[in-house]
Length: 149
Image 1 (cartoon, one colour):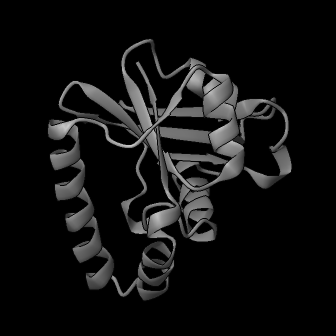
Image 2 (cartoon, one colour; image 1 turned 90 degrees about the vertical axis):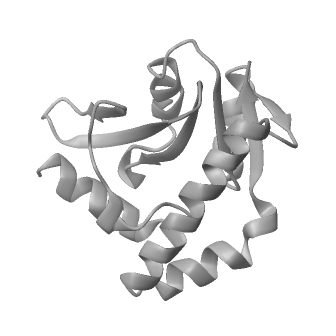
């Protein structure tokens, strides 16, 4: 299966992630494949003024529980990283990887995140992703910030 087709399929299944129409594989993407070359895990990073946000982590359901998220995090580099998530499995993995639960990422990253989230909201409205919008707003207060200094 082509990597981008797989990624869009995974994004369709996970309403906490960005819309499938925004799925892309670029220089800030980490993609893992199985022995046959099929994609099984992906993470995307966004530069937030010197800090990098892990803004999507997805592991194929058939390959979960094998430590792939830990491997993705190892490949994210050693600089400052943060992630907003409500997924308890990802929260546990982030804590084990040395991330700390924090209330606030700093002023500049927060402004950058705010602008990108507003743009994403408008995009979801344009592409009629109302189910995704409703889901994310309903769970807005459940997302937690984890940072690696």
